[in-house]
Image 1 (cartoon, rainbow, N blue to C red):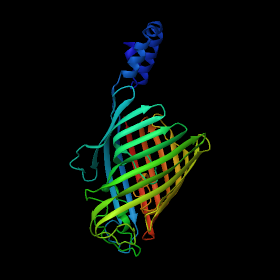
Image 2: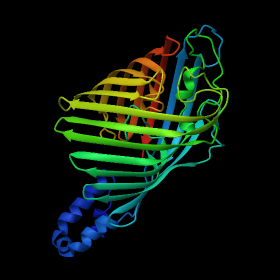
Image 3: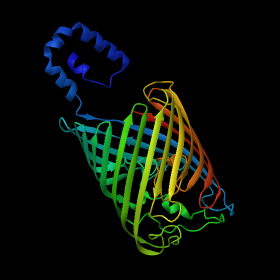
Image 4: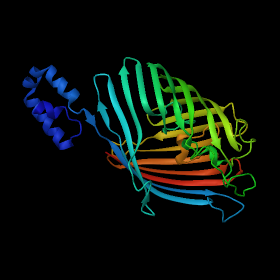
Length: 379
């Protein structure tokens, strides 16, 4: 019984203290069990469940010539309930998944009446200096130019101090929302215009390939990466060709993007770090580059009550170089400016996040801002 209790990880502090006392009392007997104890520890929980309940408030502002225009001011109050199970298959393989349910708090409404959606599902193999993922995967090539929105395919990683990651598959056009932001409310004269159906809602997919070389050397971490997107969209009512030379115009068009990126992160000590990123899409006519400079101080740790962190950043996210960036909670694709953020653990496994962005919509060259707040309850 003590051996089984020792194999459990999700126990309270009081129970852990009792288990430790029992383990000391029966030390000889437990030692005689030998391999049996190790086996119990390894296979006690074949399926582990984790997740988060997330409450988010976002308020965005866009300066426009038409002060009554839709999209000039938008407030969103929403939640996400997320489950992330991990199931052991054998000594080298496990299966991962993510299930999300979204809802709007101000209207008590949700996406598809609060239906739970399978967002990711993949098998993962772990070997010495080698890792493989198969299925519907999060994208891990580069934070600036990619997001954790999934693609269907395969990812291979090899190495230790120097790691090479290669990925290939298909990606849904619904994930290109920041590319379609080119005209709505942010064209240069500040008036409004329809976006048409740019990269959204057409049930189209693109071929996707990416490769990254990353290294960690002492206090330094960095990577260089390349990503390719290619395919054919059935588009209508899109912006003119001046925005993108390979097909942002009416009708079905071939589309291609070649995005190169580099990241460098240096940690001065346990409290301070500086990160710089740059990305460029060699196929785009305009809005073809993106960059970010960020200073981080400390950082919230979910398991440690009272820990906190803050950051100051300047980002420019040309929408064709960073079409679906992870930085969208603050600066969106198609924007540039200053972003500040704060994170704090008021209680164990509860994270509070606040962010503020002040800058411009790039195409319109007009002011824009965002207030972002979130509570995460991890379990």
